[in-house]
Length: 370
Image (cartoon, rainbow, N blue to C red):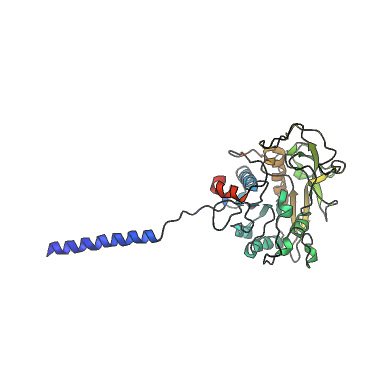
């Protein structure tokens, strides 16, 4: 009888194990991919900066993590970096996917926004975080393509069409979209010859004593990205800080070079660009300040820099310009010469568009950008 009882117990144990195994097979364990990066500040009360990447050309997914490291590790701010991703592949960066940037709810409690996106068409629930942030009049910095940060097609069902680059709808205050109303300009032109003429930044005469120029020597700001054209004068109380000289490449074009054959030592001022436009008689602002106020919202401060691609950030002057702009926008005391040393390995890619197949094959994880 005792043997029969033991056999019965053994059969129950075996059955339970098999049942547990079956359930494990039915509910596989899925590893959760990190969808954004967080760099903690020096203390719990540290101001929180949210950096939003998402452009197809200038490698904002590389530039913003490095900028966040500098702001966090050298200046004590808490930083959260967000990335464009296909919702079907969470945790895999895909700058070509324009309809999703997870984690934007971080803006609800942010003290500063750094925006580096291009032609995004985000769903309303994500756009609402931008709207709420701007309504509160909180500070922001726009980098490079952020002048044309958003763009909705006529087929997009959205309540935020007014944010579109070049908007021409009924809400007249928003004519030309987010870029013009908030930052001061939308997408306009390549003033320099794209991939052939570089940018050298000189301090505007009216800004020599501006705190954003602290620690910056006129002429040391340089980048292989060309000068963007803007319509002059910039609107409202916009104040140019850095003006962009268009510089000719002395060497030959090299598609395999990070700077396409251009060098920081290039010093020949261009006379014309590839469209025969005279480029250096009147210099375009490449960095400026402006106040903004969207309809119904509070007044806020904006700083815009159209230099700042990942490869531009190898230049110390560019990094200091961006860090100073953050301090200024948050009404923090701008350091006399901010520490902007690169943190860790920083090996940026050359700017340029990539195919959908490229991103599919690359499988770039958010975590790898840590």
